[in-house]
Length: 382
Image 1 (cartoon, rainbow, N blue to C red):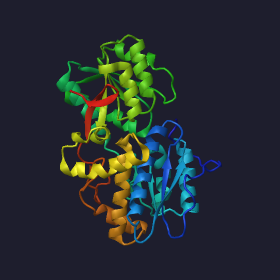
Image 2: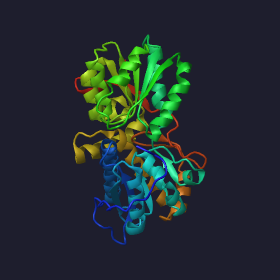
Image 3: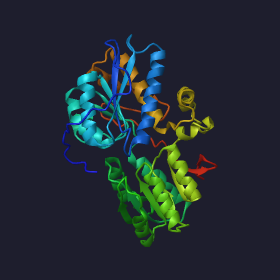
Image 4: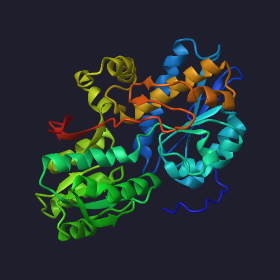
């Protein structure tokens, strides 16, 4: 996929998933990759937004009004993201965006959203330009935390010192790959091979073969989606029984599928809430547990078994947005943004946050633990 200059295409607009809002509603827009490579991740983000907004409305709404969510499918492409962002601004009259994890799509829209002075709460990394960053807030943990969690395990728990990287070309992964290459030596590791793939590739045997030939004892997979399962199957089919695979943060079903293929050879970073969905006892911090319990209950009641990794931070983003609107006493974009920057430390269901005027990356402490798969469940990696 090319992430260069985006050409606005004359395309049919996708239909939102909710009925038209009334004049009395506060409309929140969300650009989501509901088809394409981001579909699993962004569907969970949507679920968290939906659950949070329903909960807020049950409790009386905001400023005497109900919240209304409008979602649009950006098809996991920056071109379509531009189309749906513009549609939600012109037709749905949104007062803020709470969008999914397709960084390239959020980047593509950031300039005109900032000019309209609308806050953007994002499950992606921040856009690149300072004027755009002023209006964007990142609910995705910095990619360094993913890298550090895997590297620390290799350093402390294994004899592996040579590793290979296998990365897709998305903006988030490109950033993470640069960090992985630069910091390996700090953990006594050497990157002996660095390979790339496209999300729709059906086989990575050649790349994994080169990583193995370079002497790597572990593949560090940088990217999400079903490609992770493909890579796990390739490692098994190549007979690499001693090759460890350390995946990225991932959807629960994909973790389970990769773990089923590779057993103890597979592991990955995970936020504690992803384990707490099955066992709340893993949340030993009383404040974190108190924040997570109502979220987990609502999600189980609404969706049954749910992957709460992305959904929890979507829930948190809505709850914090609502608090900012209440403090501002308005839905005016600039005043909501300013109030949001002044919320201070906030313990949420998915993480703890500390946004400020100078810092729009809210998660400032590593929220990840390393997990593996046992008996079709995620377990802490020992």
